[in-house]
Structures are given as structure tokens and as C-alpha cells.
Image: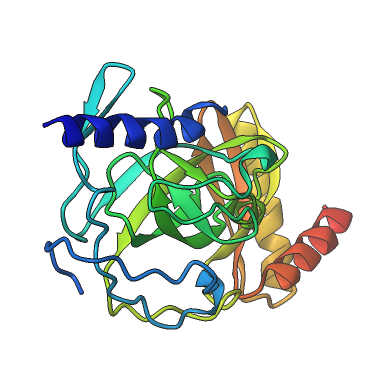
Length: 249
């Protein structure tokens, strides 16, 4: 009993790092980690043994969390933030050292280790991360990602972003980075839906006359209306097309 209490205290101390800033099997066995293996180079999601202690129930700030005991379908929408630079090199809940340049993330309940696809709902950018830490413990946040992941998602300057988190099952084949064919770029944001629709029609005419494969669409982001263009397979091509389109509109 004493050993379990000490374990919870130890885990809570590690988990507190996230709170400080802004085979598909359910069996728990000895962890097999690849902390220096870049997620961006993965072609197939591996089946890793779940950590013995990082998936136990724990309590932080009076709230008890119950991590999932197996990798299964999971989808969640909420706000994400990212680790501050001062956390580089500190231990995560998995025991691995946090590396700000690796594509990793902290989540309150997703299995450790496991993989998730994170999509920034404001710009359509997506990244695959490896869950190896617990947190964040803010009522309005669902995930903390590494600095590298935040860069790819395009919210380093903003600090937070509304995202969709989707668990990826072992064995799922991933497309090479930059070739997902699901990249969109924001052209303009409007407070008025009517103005956004007018801009959408103008943009669509330009794309059609240019014989472009891309299309323009209107999406609502919180209280604003955004005209978005895509899809693109490569971020560089998307950025170039956006720059070109803005010069003619």
C-alpha cells in the first residue's frame, strides 16, 4: 500500500511538468521504447507494449484520471498547447527524456506509449505524435505537444490551437510526411458570413479559370468565417499557391 502511494506521488510530480505551462493488446508488460526513433520516418504504426505504471489511475489537483488500458479507437476535439523550452531533457511519465525536437505529446488518458493524429482545425495541418507523457491538467486543454509538433501544426506563435486528436491503431500504414493530400491554407478571415461568401465566389472563379485542381471552401472558426484553399500534398506548394492567389485577389 505504501509502495502504491509513493508511486502515485512520483507520477504526480512528473505529471506536474505539463501543468506548469500554459500489439493492440490491453496487457501491461515491460515497455519497449524507441525514444530516438523519429515518428516522421514511420511508415507503419508499431505495436508497443504498454508501460507498467504510466497507465495506472492517478490523481492531480484533487481530480482522478483513469488512463485507457488498451489502444483503441478514440477521437476528441479541444484546445492543445505545447511544452515550454525549459522542459527539454526532463523525464516524462514514460521515463523517457523529453526532446522538444521529437514528435511527442502528453495526454491525460491515452495509453502510454501509443500514437495519435493531431489536426489543427484552424488551418487543416496534421501531425502524428507519440504519446509518452501525462498532461495537460487545465480544464480547457486536451493535449500538450512538443515544440516540433507545434511547428508542424502551425501554432507556435499563437501558443494554443483548437485540434482534433485521433488515436492511431497499430498496423495502420502512414503516408509519407507532406504527401497526405489534405493540406489547406487560409486565405482570408471575415466577421461577416456575407463578405466571406463573396470572397469565396471570387476565389473559386480564379481557381476555375486557372484550371487548378484545388478548390475554395468556407469554414466557420469560432465566431469568424474563413475562406480556405486546397487540398495540397505538400506544404511548400500550398504556401506558394496562397502567396500567388493573394496577389490576384
